[in-house]
Length: 301
Image (cartoon, rainbow, N blue to C red; front, side):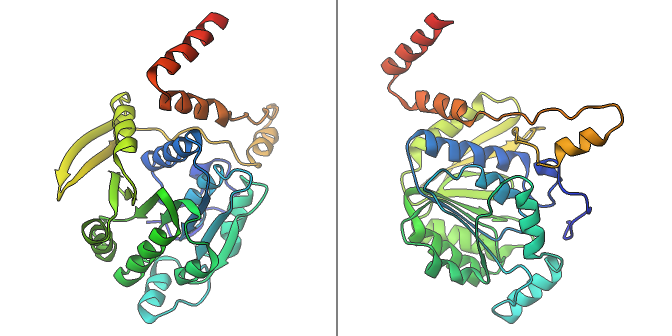
């Protein structure tokens, strides 16, 4: 488990940023946020616990005009209690706000709003029912995770998505207890499980689950299983050699290529987010309308 910036070279690709954000979770973040945007859902974004910024960088790409993106972390600040202090000293001693912000600025022109301190700050700083997507990846201690889940419930818009990290790692039993307690006793409905994260909602999970299942069945690099437990449909996804989705390179990538002898710097590729969102939007329409749109496109080709 890496806990320090592995190199002083600025990241050229998202996967150069140290952190625990597998290709499957990158795909699910992108897919779920694209689905929200295609269906017209608007709302703010929140990440609690950012480490060196890997998932925050991807999430920040989905912030649209008029939306606010907030991140919260202790960074090098004081922990609120002895147990949290010991956890931070053991696993995150090298984490600083400067390291996070430098990584983030490699991929984005503007920083998110940064709250430096314990996750308990979030309730006072983020408006209730304002968020469409909340990622919780801070403390692994039961009491803190339980409170973070409660905050997510209050901050999410109806039908919004919460993501709980490390819900089944052997070294994070407190997260497991808090996550499944929320499912069994606090109304959280699972959307899907990856190897590392539980994706959930306090709304109706079925429409999103149906589209997730259809998406997974079309992919050769994603294993799918569907189970029933305690009245919940559990959609479990697992990578089979999956590659991370395309992500624009950092501002340093072109300079590195230009410095190579005899190789001109390529233009930074333009990532067309609208095209994928429009494809998802077409899939959300009634079949008769979808066929008409696709027929018109075929006539223009």
